[in-house]
View 1: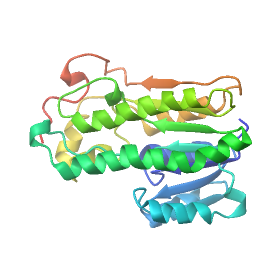
View 2: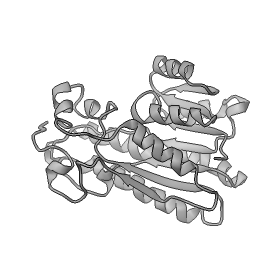
View 3: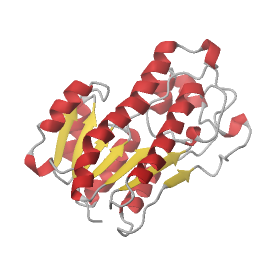
View 4: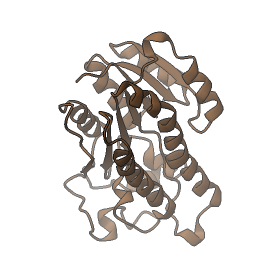
Length: 257
């Protein structure tokens, strides 16, 4: 693994936190980005590597641009970008969904992911070295009732990833899309159901879902590949979930919103 500095969005919990812990074990310097400064500082103090904290909303592009422009010298040359920040809101059918929820998902999962990628990619190309790892979702490939805009945003992430690969042919910069299935060691479902713990818990009732560490291990393996190897995409699901199956195989049908 020949990477020195990684930036992780959504680093304060769940998959982002697990990736930070895993990459810290590899000795990579980390830029931790999320909204909650207290959690980021706590994580920074736990990790056995150099860390720089950026506490801001990923949709606040003005602040984000300022923070990137003022990175301390040891963190200035980012060679790994982990686009992990993202969310799902609601599970209603399209005609009953909230427009503000749709807009927030599009802004966070698509626009801000693309914005941050565009900010860091030119320097990676100039140095002819770097890796962008997008944390997508199986929802970008397999439809299920209520996924509507969330699934569409993750389909964007998948297509954006493969199109980046086409644009980067002739360079050594790599791009990977990681697509997890059901995973409960994050605030994902709690955010989706806006703090309703009973609804969030029912999604995983009776199942053994993925762990955040499973996704983090995939990221570690991706980054460890020889320089001539690009992993285009990884799709991972718990054994109790299957692609293309009935609705209950993706989101439990007894979960109502």
